[in-house]
Image (tube, rainbow, N blue to C red; front, side, top):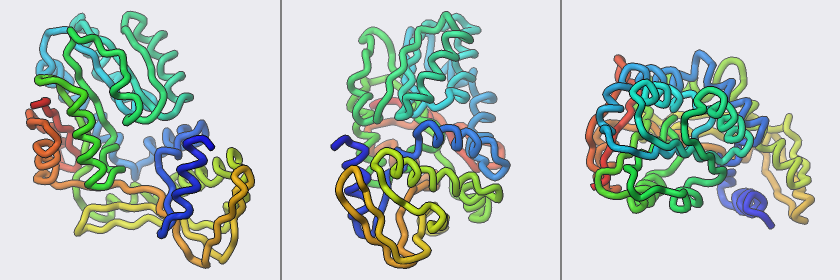
Length: 312
């Protein structure tokens, strides 16, 4: 049984049921997420791109003149990191670029694009999970390490998972290495909820696509039309969560595994957490994770924050 099958089976047997959001990104899922990032309701990408454009020189100066390698965790299409890559090249900066992504398809497209657009960049892509790949990257010890973790991907972790992840990254870095990490800030609940329940239904399709993937890869028989997408936001905790809810009692067969999963009517599958943060929590995450905050970069409205931290 491969990791995908094992994790899907384990999640569907939990109480309550859950599916790991990292499996959203098959080829169809990656294309759907590209659509999500262009939606008017999905402010996160737009704000982060704006911050990177406005602060790219400040970020370059913070990294300093010495040679470095930039590790891009969850690189995706590379749209955000390319802002920095272009700027670094203007100053003839000596750096290597190491994009990491769970989607092999997205990563192969990115590497091809980089070869065409930036042939002078030393780029090497790595497909897989952050926890599996980060320590195995071919770091050059003489270069400073700069890790990018953009898109508020940290918000997909629970608080305990986020702290564990930051410790893991810190333990793979040395003093004076850097982490540039994106955080979506707490704000108007209506603005947040609309980003995860768009009027065009693309986010709904994105969530349901994971059931389609399970049907295809595990020979399952999820009846997609009987599942309802539901998003909710708790302004007390900052947790924005997505669910798929079975509209009727049913039993789903996972043919490739010889297993079946029963759903009561209106039983939910937890699909994704997208945590929103306040600034005190962000600082605490840095300090408890082995980092020292260096500088925060924000959009003019204070809705999104890029934090630059140094390894202690």
